[in-house]
Image (cartoon, rainbow, N blue to C red; front, side):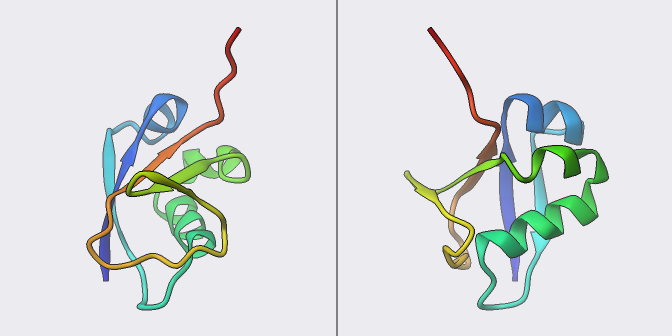
Length: 81
């Protein structure tokens, strides 16, 4: 399945584009998505362990399954104050 992934902040900068399409086998998880992102955009690799992933309006863990057609967003953790 192909999933569209929107990239924000440093993830967007490292990938050099605001979104990517990633091909994943059915039944893939967020961990699989991160691995595929690193293979497709090697500049993202240093960020992958910290990368936050949202599916729809909810944050996802590495174990969360990816559902075809889901809206996916990735961004690094942010701090504020």
